[in-house]
Length: 274
Image (cartoon, rainbow, N blue to C red; front, side):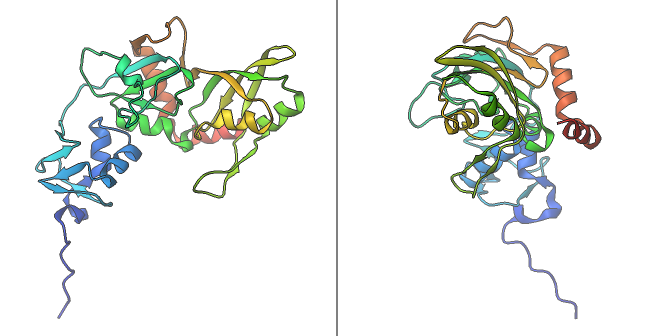
């Protein structure tokens, strides 16, 4: 007699039920897939009254009642894309136990959508911050595989030498808290102004480690005095006052999606040129 497979302990662990829950949350604009996974592990998601705090998990969007952080999941929402000129002194998270000021609090969008910042921009840094409820786009923009470049204007202490520039462009080793560490990916630098005590430069990155530029410059003995993001893919920070925001234009959104959803061949060509 054939042995039957044991029934799943929970209904949401049955892969035949539908889609992975983190994908559904991302598609619904709740957060990127990685952020959605973190919310699940934290116990912020329930399915039909049962807490889902482990992955993998699958749901049937047409039948299941899904609650995220106390709010029912909306099946159809308006996708919003906002460009904010973030001031220094604001954090990019949507909740902060330390009570610091939130960048999302600067955006009073008519849709009242819950928006999430895309990509790291630490509290002491300013400049271009994209906020959206389009979780799938956010995931593509932040995943290192797709290489959406970001450009920063950086003021550092001291005179940056040609040897320093070569080291930064080729990549330097950075230790990580929970990992052995690795060499940073190739960067592109351009000196804008240099005097005896300070150097103003632009730096283009293909990755987004935590406080990466500050750590790289400190490693070379040039502490960062000011850091501002001025470009993210095709988006540029122009004509927007500090603390102000606006919706992306149709052309900007189309260009951003083209870059974020480029096929594998396009990504390979970018890497070959790097």
